[in-house]
Length: 383
Image (cartoon, rainbow, N blue to C red; front, side, top):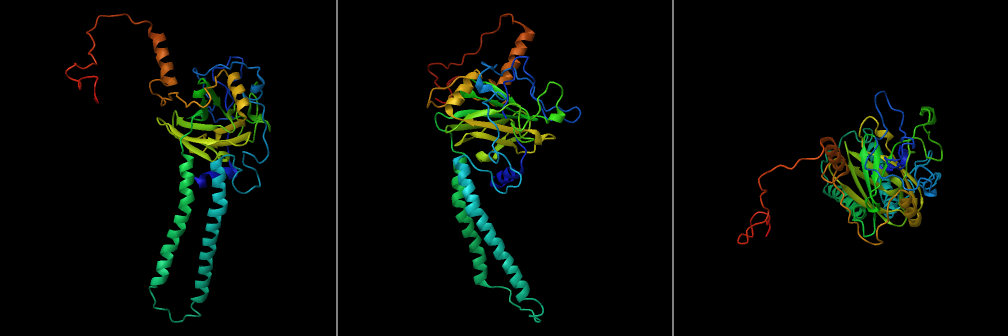
């Protein structure tokens, strides 16, 4: 995981949360990257999305989010810099320290030691100095050393590694804000179950040379090329975030290097992790799992704002704020499961198409209650 995040932070292509898909017809459709013939990267309208309650709110000044512009070298890959992005979560800061203070020095020392041994062996045991080759085949002491030394090194590295791995998947505490990220080919959909369930869809912004009439192209204020999105998601600073990922088609991966987060989004499965953002700012990420022809055009853009500003943004979007400190009690169904948005919409369409069902005489349904004298009968399993 550390290697994957390090690579993503050095050079990346990433993404800004989206407006609810059921915005009024006057709102321009989400923009997408220029697509090859017959392929679209624009998210379809989501019928379950909640209309924006207050489109004129200052909290919706830019892309349906607070007006926040890019800060150089923060939350994005920067040309000419080497190393991991500055981290804004506790886990990220610990991982950054472990990378710079433990892993890199250990790798450097081992590499230099092995290189020195190669030079020494090449010089000391070359043919000119050893016309008659040695017949030595074993050295018990050296064999013990080269067996035990790697074991000791791995054990020492494992101690902080296991602690970091455990912290990354620690369950979110009460009062956490739930963000559900849903991967699609090729865009992200976001839901806020604890805040009324409103939905946001995010597509990558096209470059100005690629946009059609009436569409908005990317500007420097939106973010770097291939990272800016037509809508941004907003999260509060200093509040635990419960991230849930899933997918509607193939495996995607929600990754933001500055948060030290990379969580796979798998069809039919809910993956979960938690983190807390410590500094306000605009942070970019990307899909980090090869998911198809337009894998490189699934950016993520997150605005981290103070809790009061987050609450104002939620209200402007038509959402609600939960009871402070109360654990989330929202049921988050798997994609396609009974109770999911897709199933609810499908049921509604079926009902509209077929019309009302006439009552007919049928046999009485079987009772699910067991007889009094038979507590283990139907409907009482487990007693």
